[in-house]
Length: 82
Length: 82
Image (spheres, each protein chain N blue to C red):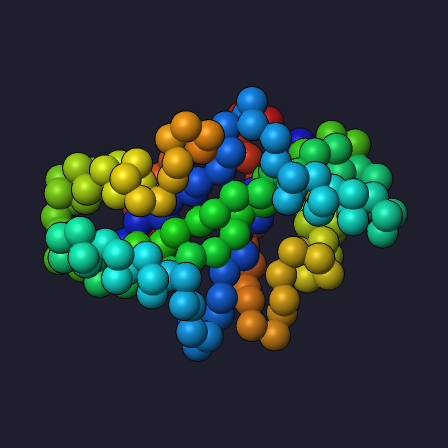
């Protein structure tokens, strides 16, 4: 069983990496780009867990290890076909 | 129109960040975790583009700017509800 967890800054938090990418894209002529937000993605193989265990473990792992809940939010889902 | 682009190492490339997270999770007792891969996620607001333009622009931006095609792969999709 594999899951994908997306971690990104809360909307109220400045995202300097995303701003830098946006500025680079504008310099290259990609004017259709209005905003860029950058975050992290984790793909975790929970081979030893049932779906129910995963639903308990994944939010706990995200809060304790992957995201800083003060400034970051996360979302997650099971990866399809598994 | 908003899109989400996931960039991660190709499967054949070592992922030291993911390994470090996996080791940390094992130290904390999360033995169900068999593997962790870490990557980047970009959410881009293409307010000025049609869907067709986005389908041309996004892979180009991903290849030229967001991913290193030698060692990284990417996938992307439109964000729902937009």
